[in-house]
Length: 330
Length: 268
Image (cartoon, rainbow over all chains, first blue to last red; front, side):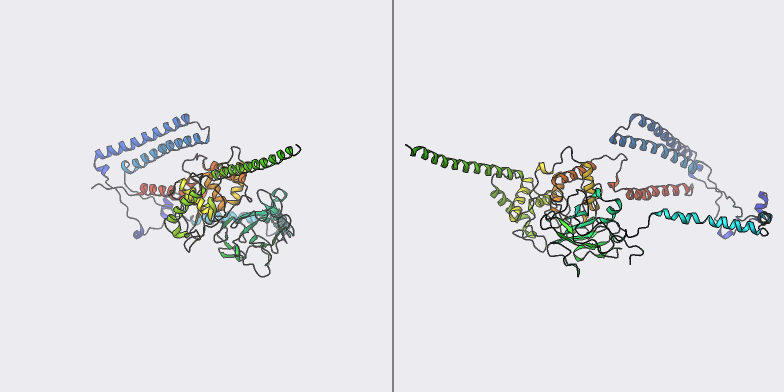
């Protein structure tokens, strides 16, 4: 198909929506040769500046050898600045050249029709249909069925490989290592927390065992915050009257929304705030959700103190799954 | 003749008693003077005079909100039992005296000299027992402080509010966790010890002085790390960098693109 034919196939453009073509603009530079000369000098100066920048880049590369974090900073700044000058000078010069000195007439570049000509479409369809007929598929039903079996089976491996998404959680989502008698170990120092370690307004992260004795999975779900509230402010939920010990309360540290660690404790309002999505839990009120996307209270860990050692311990494990909701949680 | 040695022995015992008493007084006195100088009082020697000076300053600058005896009013909390460390932190960072009521007292240029702060602290400490101002050897991290462990403690206990490099961050109800970029070692220690504002309290039983020093060493080391890339944009991480890249970088590119495409100027 020749260009001439394409041109003939093109629908006539509607005159009312075509932009008005300005055939030739007389710029100040076109009218006044002195202004043209000045524009040329500006462009040339800009190119020269770019050349200086490039030379500066090489000089800076040689002069500032990065051998420490501080000198790397100096080197980075000089390299960046000089390369910036080199590229910006080049760009400014090129744009100025085009805008001030090159001819300023507008031209129209015609677009050819997007659809192929009907003859080409028919030829392509003919090739496909001929190929299909030559395979003999409509006649050879044995081939058709075995091919269907082979191709259909090929869809199974991806489904079988879903097994690699990991072992089934089984009871793992509902249990934690916390059990009756677990001591409350400080998550970082590994010391069992004792009565009196926390001042009023203090909080700490505790684990059922020293960190190195917990597997990654157990570590991920057993973090608990131990908080000492202002005396007399705790309002235990019905049935949980003896779950706190002398204004000390323990709640799961894992947000019930999507499981971020709740480390942001505000002492004055006694609220735990999740830094991920701003779910806010009112600690003295049974860690009730008072703001944000979380839907459930934090699970509470019942605690008491050994009369002999003064160490905190859990009087039972969690009575509900910790962390975010999951499909069959109920 | 047989009585004499006995008498001597009795006199000996009496003298020994006096000596023991003198030695005990000397020990107690020395220990007391060491203890009082350790709490950093410039007007040392007479704690009574220091407390009196502190009371005078308190009545002038603090009592209108905190009450004449620091008992607290509707406008300000009670100061009974907050301890000298809390006073030193609040006044030396300029948070107190408060210039105007707000969600939170902002840090500003301190209004009192260290001597006046010590007097105020001594007076408030006399109202009720509370944490004392830590001594230099207590808050200064040793040369071989465990930076990595300090970092672990910082990320677990502090980073949720103060950001992982101590640049601060927003809290609920219009409050914010201040940046730790200008806090002194002493102020960092006092803040952990007393829990100013809405910050939780980290007692010395929970985080030992040595662990607090590790945290201080981590903060002061991290904030003194140079920024090899130039502008650190508050070290807030990829979000700020992305924001600057999109808004400023793309903005400049858009302006340049508009300049390239603009119609040429016509001659008059």
